[in-house]
Length: 152
Image (cartoon, one colour):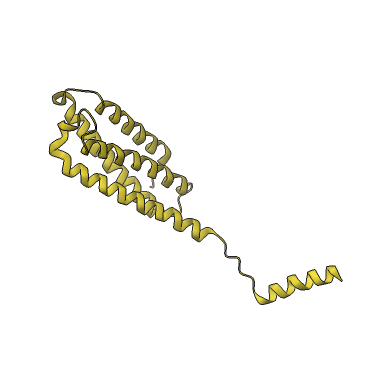
């Protein structure tokens, strides 16, 4: 039995969790108390965004897929930006995650590449849904003949 996936709600939650983490990392929290939780949350968001991305890429017949993909891009971009700030020591708690820096860097690069793939998917969809404006010789003749009859 297939389960219904609420992409909008899931992406809203992940976006909210990303914003909450950014706010938390701007505080000077004690890493002994909060470091483990922040790391767990970062890797949870990472894994979940990847899983949602895979599901959206494989389910081409999903209703509102285009909108979900656009929202996923937005959430991935926010998460990649957060990881970038963490890696570049732009947040007060950044130093607490030095041991995870290479893994976080890999996660960030994976999401940036994923954004590019998702954007390419959106662009190819737009190109493929545009109807070709091709008329056959007979159709031209018919259209021109009707115009000539109306004028004459």
